[in-house]
Length: 376
Ligand code: NAD
Image (cartoon, rainbow, N blue to C red; front, side, top):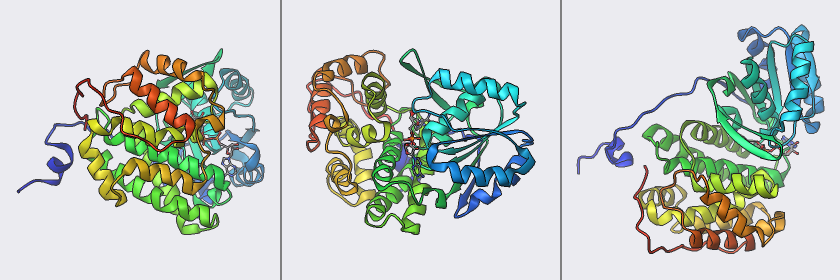
């Protein structure tokens, strides 16, 4: 059969691909280039954001920025509470800040993005987890206990410095689930309604890199090659997240994080095998591609086993999900749902969440309702 690679991956469906403008430096020790990046962006009074594990590196970066460093802040919190951003906005005004440098995981990156949304100041991000937020024009922020998400070109960081050395001491327990968070971005990109062959290629490359790297990091957290592969996979997964629309899995994690304050990366890791099992019947081509990329017959079971191999918690209950919360989570997921390749069915979602709560193996969720076909 004379089939082009494009038609093989996309069924000859026309598509749109829009590259997001961001500059990336990748390697070991690349943080030494932070001064050059600040100069390129015309930053002369930088606000340096960091979390407690990075106080020492923040000192080092302040030294490298020299006179371009104007002030520092170390109080970023998960889910980007607006009151923290307001506090930092006062600093931005008081110090005449003209650019932001952030070192940390998605929480610190989120604060940098919240400032950029309000000021359009340039950002340099040095990621230390595999969350992928640095590659997206998306910000989730929390006000009065409600987390809302918005998208704007102002939010996308201009420059990202991936320094593998900054991830070498990311605790094993966080490394594994954070890597699963990245795999979730890549998997949902494959069946996004606006999927395209470029993002498909990045997604599969990302998944291959992370699936190989995460168990190796568990076995030896100081494995430099595995750390580099994981960060590379996380970068590509972040591009996927920023480029195409996510579906049921991300909706469920958003609901669970917001309503029950469950930890972000762990929730993604534990829901992923079950959300994919729910969608699998609607996306047979995606399942075939994942199966080939991972070299396994049962992709959902392989992801469940990967969770065990990296030492993820046993199930959502182990990270604080109340059994009685399942009904509320189903209601919230059904209200204002993300577009999903398979229609959302109350019974199916309930069964999915119950299995994720229990830490059970993922199971095919059958349905009498017709599927609306595959989105990619
Ligand atoms: P995080 O940034 O909260 O970090 C988790 C923990 O790991 C923290 O205690 C942190 O101090 C610690 N840590 C981080 N890097 C470390 C390192 N190298 N060594 C030692 N400790 C380290 O968690 P996260 O999972 O990276 O980010 C979660 C947040 O990011 C959530 O608020 C989520 O909504 C957001 N997020 C947003 C996007 C987006 O595109 N908008 C994408 C992904 C995540």
